[in-house]
Structures are given as C-alpha cells and as structure tokens.
Image 1 (cartoon, rainbow, N blue to C red):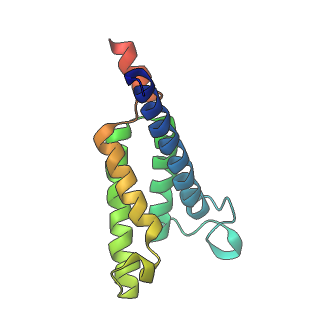
Image 2 (image 1 turned 90 degrees about the horizontal axis):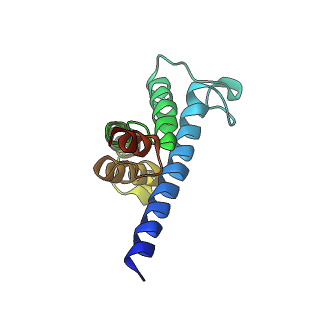
Image 3 (image 1 turned 180 degrees about the vertical axis):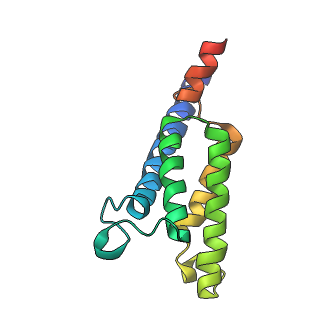
Length: 138
C-alpha cells in the first residue's frame, strides 16, 4: 500500500463514517423533534420538546445535520459525545440497573459516544465544510 493510497483511503473511510453516523444520528433526532421517520411521540408524531426526549431530539437533529456537513465538527462532536454518554449512563444503565450494554440495550449510545469522541479529536477531514473553510483561509 502506498502512502498516497493510505491517505486517500483514510480520508474516504472517515468521511463515510462521519456522514453515515451523522445521518443515523439526525434520523433519531428528527424522529423525536420533528415526528419524521415514524416519530416517537403520540401517534408517531414529535415528542413534547420541553421533555428530556425533546431536548435530545433537538440536539441530535441539529448536531446530526452539522456533522453530516462537517461544520463545527470538533465542538459539535464533543457535545454529541457527551449527550450520548449521558444517555447511556442515565437512560440505559440507570434506567435498567444493568451496567452492560447487552443487558441494558445501550449499544447505540455507547457506539455514538466513542464515534463522536473520535471526530472531536480528529475533526471532519478535508471532505467537509470545515475542510473547505480551512483551505479558503490558507
């Protein structure tokens, strides 16, 4: 494997992960906040925005859209990672009394916690609005 191929492959893989995970995250938020994709509220509508699910839905929708675009990626990913960590500990572990994800069904928030932590450390990469803004500055 050449260094050029390695660099391109890493860029493509990280970009694909950011967009795919961001889209899935956006959908979870839009289910809660907007009632889209089957909704999570009464009669498959939006949840009450003044509840913890409403707050989560607003964050996930906004953060998901920003992460797909790769805009403000590091701070947004850090906040999203924190939201998912809180979700895991509060709703899954705390709600079930079981620490392990195979018992508390917290696999998805656990994975999101670490996926967003990775992007808060690495950034969005060159195929993003953050990357375009960085190129424009230099």
